[in-house]
Structure formats: structure tokens, C-alpha cells
Amino acid sequence: MSKLLIVCFVLVFICSCGVHAQEKKAVLNHVAFYVKDLAKSTDFYMNMIGLDSIPEPFHDGKHTWLSIGYKSHLHLIAGSKGGAVRDKNSHLCFSVPEVAVFVEKLNKAGLPYEDWLGNKQSVTNRVDGVKQLYLEDPDGFWIEINDARQ
Image (cartoon, rainbow, N blue to C red; front, side):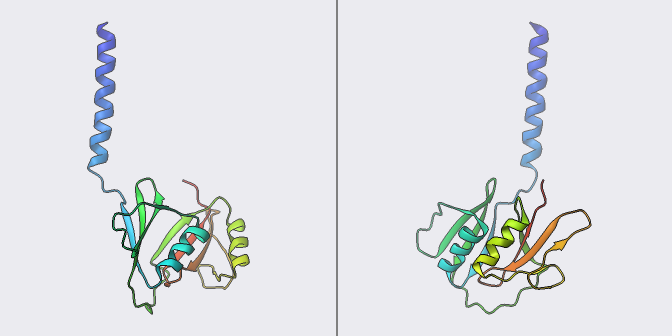
């Protein structure tokens, strides 16, 4: 019986250490994009990228919240005047099972994309075997799509 208590104590200790260690780390909660046309941006992220909407607390027609991972969200907020030029180095990245299938979807929709060097309708093949491409959302935010698996 005492061995069972010791094993239980050790398990509880190990589990509680993991919980406390996680509480001390920062985790991604959300990324917010200020957009010109909320409906157009929402459509892009839901239908092209494949994100699901989640409830948002404002209910004012100026916000869309989308799930981008476990307890992580993309907040789209209406009101931007637009026109900002954004650098590709600042981008949001999503992994897909097959880049070639995603390229077919982009081509069917007539959306432009490019490789890292800027070659139109091209895909980068990284030295580690990952395929990646870049495209802009309706407001010019850069999005990377790759097939990297975690």
C-alpha cells in the first residue's frame, strides 16, 4: 500500500510541475489584423485558408474571430483605410498537408502567389524539403503556406 501512495505522490508531483512550468511560459493568444473590408477578409480566411470562425464577444459587425490553433485566434477588425504596403518578412504562416493541392485551389480562384524570391506562381523548395509559397490577403498582409509538419 505504501508503494502505491509513493507512486501516486510522484505522479501528482510530476504533473503539477508540468502545469506550473506551462503557466510561466507565454503562449500565443491571438493575432489581430485591422482590415478594410471585413466580409472580404473573413471570406478569404475561411474559404481560401480554411479557418473556422469562433464566437466573438462584441457582436457589432466589426469583428471576426477565427481559430488558428489550440486556444489561438486570428482577430479581424474592420475599420482600416487600407493602402499600407507590407513586407513579406512579416507574415503569418499556415501549414497544409500538400502544397500542390493548395496551389490548385489558388489557381482555380485566380489568386496570385509567389516563392520567397518573388517569382510569380512559383513555390520555394527549401533545403530541408519543405515546400512554401507566399500570397497576400485582401489587405496586403503576407501569408506563407507550407507543408512543414510539427
